[in-house]
Image (cartoon, rainbow, N blue to C red):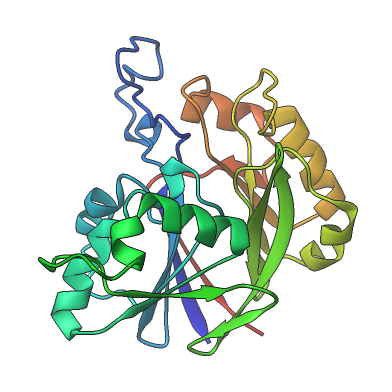
Length: 257
C-alpha cells in the first residue's frame, strides 16, 4: 500500500515567526523558516488521517487543499495539538458524517475539558463538530493501515507517538522509555522532537535527538517541533547527511509491508 505523508506543521507551540520576535529566524526570507504548529497528514487507500489538529489546522488544510478527513489521532491534549478540532466541521458537512478521533485517556480527558460543548452534546444551536472518541489501548487499524502507539514522556505527561509501517512519528517528549525502543526498530523514517540547542525540561535538544538517532538507527531521520532558535539551512548544514529538519509542506511517499 502506498502512503503519502505531508508535514502540516513543524514548529513549536508558539510557531515561527513567533509573535513580537525580531530574531534572525523570525525575520528570515527562507520559507522553510515559517513553521506552523506540529502535525502530519497521511493519505492512503483514498482516505485521509491527521495526527493532531493544531491551532493552525484551518490554514494547513487550505494550504494542502484538503477535501476530506476520515480520522484524527491525538498524541496528547496540549493546546498546540488540539485547538483546531473545531475546524473539522466543514468535513462533517461535506459528507454528513461523524469523524472518529483517537487518543489515550489523558488526551481524551483533556479534549473533553477544552471542548465540553462538543462532548456533552447539549449545545442547542448546532454548529459543533460531529466526532466520536475512541480510547487507544493498543494498535489501531484505520482503513488498512495499523497505527502502533509508542509511549514517550513529555515531562510528567505520557504522550503517544505512532509507528505505521516502517515510519514513526514522535513529537513532544524528553524521554523515550526503554520499553518503547523495540517498537522503533528497523525504521526507514523517524520523526523526532528537536526543539533547539539549549536544554528544555520537556523537549529534546538537537544533540539529544541526534543521540536518539544513533540508538534507533533509522535510514532517515527528520526533526520536528522546531523553535525559532534553529535556522533551517544553517542547522541542516551541521547535521549528518541522513538527518534533516522537516518543514511545513514536506512530502514523503512510502510503501507499507
